[in-house]
Amino acid sequence: MDKYDVIVIGGGTAGCAVAYTAGMAELNVLLIEKGIHLGGTITSALVVPAMKCGEHQINTEFYDALAAELKAIGGQATYLDNQGWFNPELTKIALDNLMAKASVEVFFDTHIQDVLVEGTELKGIKISKELLSVYNDTLENIDRDLSVSIAAKYYVDATGNCEIGKLCGCNFLEEKNEQQPVSLRFMMGGVDVPRFADWLKEFDKDRNVTTVEDIDGFIHLSTAYTWDKDKKWALAPLFEDAVSKGILKNHDRNYFQIFTVAGMPTNIAFNCPRIIDYTDTLQVKNISKALQLARQNIFRLANFCRIYLPGFENAYISNIADMLGIRVSRRIKGKYIYTIKDVKSAKQFDHPVLVSNYPVDVHSNEKDKSTLDVVSDYQLPLESLMSADIDNLYVAGRCISADFMAQGALRVQASCFSMGVGLGKYFAECEGKSVNF
Image 1 (cartoon, rainbow, N blue to C red):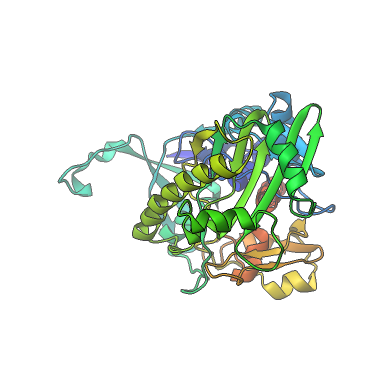
Image 2 (image 1 turned 30 degrees about the vertical axis):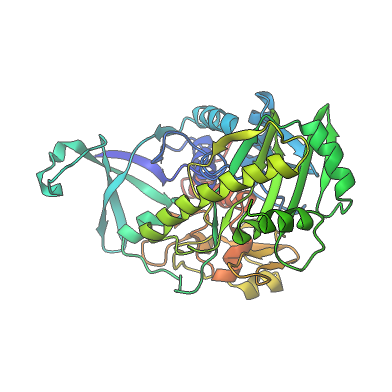
């Protein structure tokens, strides 16, 4: 059985931060990713930019290292006082570079078959050596040499859906009606961005919604519209006209947000469509229907942009995300259950892994029911990343031990980066090591 100090399952934002930090402490680290590249929501789900989380963040070393690595290869910009404007494709390369720097061993295209649990300790995990195509056979007939067991002192479930915690039989916090709609992001290429930017800044003068900025000769912009009535949206008449003419369906306009992308001067990234009909992210049938519906929405939204937005006349769909943007799913029961009261009271903890002021951001599938509550700085304790059931199992990312509303404030990438660094530092301290960033 192969043995490591730390095994991280899930190579997304949180998992990469854990692995990098532990690796920089010279711990023997294995990072297991089911896909063929790292980055998770940034790369597979096209979730850019990373949202800013205040001026007093802690455990930002991995975030800073990623931004620096991306800047060096032309894939990062600082816009609206936020360094998190990343190029999703170049992020795949930057993360490979960082894992190499930290001497992290990475297994791609690798799936967890089973776990070995004794009492309250995770003793090992079984991974597939090969991808198997099995037709009309039972698992018992598969050659057992095709799987291998690996073990570590510390295990981190950074799978998003807490798949390792599920295999270990851990207790969870999610309840039936605690769901948020998913999104499937996409990009359009061939956009005349300068022309669109000139039109946009005149069409919408609300700088709380629409911004346009020239940064070293590269135009960056952002704008938004939702069907909620909490704002007077400049783009509203365009969407209403498109619905009346059958170019869009009414639900297509529930959420629309677009950005420029670092290093892609003719591309625009879309934080939409938001799929309101299928919100149960743990049901394969629901997720499959959501994906099919989302791609139809994308086709209509792209057509809308070509018709209504100057600069999009020759634009085309250049990329559709390979992963749904899932805001909440399974959440583990940890040694501390973090609550919305903790967020709003700014409760202090002895071992915080992050400090953030990102708002309580909970999307709804109903009109005018979404939550976006501004809060002051709050902390998340290390104990919310520790399983209450398995002594050496930890979590990072959206599957942390938090109630539904609190998780809505904590799920963003900058906070996931900090969670990962906090865990990596904890493992280093337990092993008497120092982290040499």
